[in-house]
Length: 461
Image 1 (cartoon, rainbow, N blue to C red):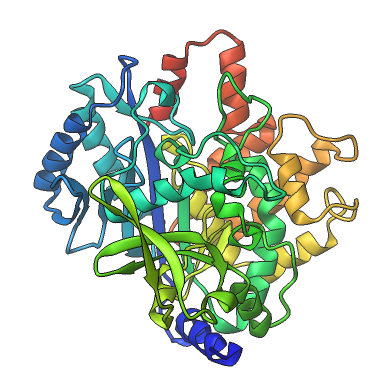
Image 2 (cartoon, helix red, strand yellow):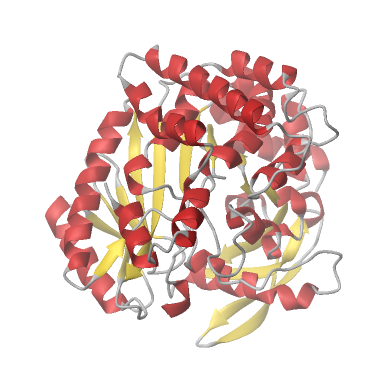
């Protein structure tokens, strides 16, 4: 296929939705680990029972069942909210129908969360606000038994096929079963696409400073956001353009399309079966006559030949920190699950700054605290997810820069007249104490606070 035809399809899928006139909405997704406080594996039968109770209480309708007939997704037809399990039944996700006021989302989140906590308490279980399940080593870290998650688990566990590549693979291919995120989707305007991607890319180091909350306790307590490593050093990162930072400047929509063309596809669906294959760049994929993949069939994987077609773009799944979606939105996905009482500060931060995009760009372009020291934004994020910083960074000035950014978000939220700026209070506390949830967790642990007490603290609503 000609490159021009590929570009036309990408433009139709990713760019044209941003041209549509629409109201500005907010989409919020919050994943939370499920913890069995008895220090035993989460019993999935318990989870299935609580799912049924939730659906009955809140009048949700079943949206997805696994191969064993168990519910893994349900939706409310009135407000669009979704209860689901991401990757495994150890990780619960609440996704909210698009809204314009963050307090509406916060109210529904609290209602759902309090109900779930009350039901889980009956079994000595809890949800908590941590980016890594603190009791992951007790759990059955297995995927939901359906086509998509079984394929994903298989793909991540295939890293041993690629050991000849010049990259390091971590030893946690099952990370999707015990890592939890807090994601935000915001509508983006066509004429601000490049500015949005460039500016929020420069912001990623500051986000690492404020939001890091995924620590491998007892294994790697110097890295405060293992979430980055999980994706970048897995089979998702075979093509680095599929994960992490952009590490380039976009000058136009054409530049953005050129970047998307360099990303890789690793799965498609045919006749209801998910087919996995080694990641292939889009331009190469669509120029092949056929691709050899494998699919799950009654406990074994079978080979299959498929012919690429443009509809396969539906299965292009990248894991960038900032992703342009087919909905005409920007999805911000680099933030870990936060302590529960702080859950909406993630969305508030992004919403406020999206309304102050030009000012944010100016602050970051003129910064001399972290920028202009020989490091790109991707390198700076890797520095700021660590407990200790190099000498060129003045910590007091760094947190002053963070406050300047949060103040800008505060101003953007204030202008919306919903009182949402109050949701930023946790960030001001973190700046004042020069900490973040991950640092605080380690400090509590080092003071002798029991892990179960830290779990309870991070679970408070």
